[in-house]
Amino acid sequence: MNILLGSLLIIFTIQILFFLGAALFKTDKVTDLSYGLTFVVLVWVFIFRYQSPTLFHILIAGMVTIWGIRLSGFLFIRIMKTQRDKRFDGVREHFLKFARFWFLQAVAIFIIMLPSILGLSKANGTLSFVSFLGLGIWIVGILIESVADWQKFVFKNKEANRDKWIDSGLWHFARHPNYFGEMTVWWGLYLFVLPTLGGVEYVSIVGPVFITCLLLFVTGIPPLEKTYSRKYKGNMEYQQYRNSTRLLIPLPKILTDK
Image 1 (cartoon, rainbow, N blue to C red):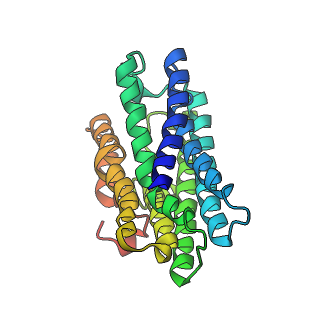
Image 2: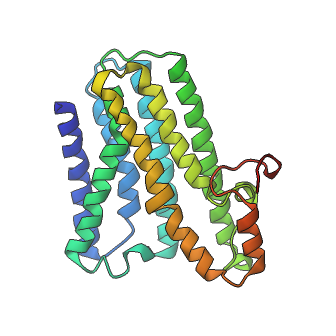
Image 3: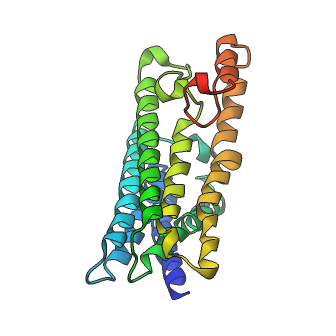
């Protein structure tokens, strides 16, 4: 329980500090940056608790760090180019509304991190077949997410593609491959720590379930699908792409019904 309370304290402290800076300067430049970095800081706080962390601990920290640095760096480069995040229009100017977002972000980080927190709390975490299976799934997820984000970033930064949707690369096989990669990362991490869990700790599956549901039904796919449907309502090429391309999993179209 102390481990969980300590993790909450660290998460909320980092988020509050970033929030105060963002609210003071009315900026969106640190919002997403703070998200990934909070995960990274938390895992290394755990690592430094051990005089001799095991390979199990180091692999968890490594997976979370690679994911966090990549995502934070990518989103920071993107926001420095756009200068603002449209999600916060009409929000960043209101202290309490803006604070609500940061509070919810802190809670989300804690929930998503639960499996990793519990895994890192085990002084003698060991590796098993399931752990290596989880590591393999994590590798697949981080590769898909990284490639999809990069392909879309390059596509969107070409003047010729202004106001177009991307349907090349991984995006030819799925409309949201980056989100599939994100979900896969956290399911891989859960499987990695699963052999060390016991009893009530199995409830930490809420972590990957939470991020999956969040992206599928709340903040990820739904608003983008709504925006694209409205923006390209009369565009037959987009409608054909939408109807012939899977929503999430980037599989060859010959293997799909669409």
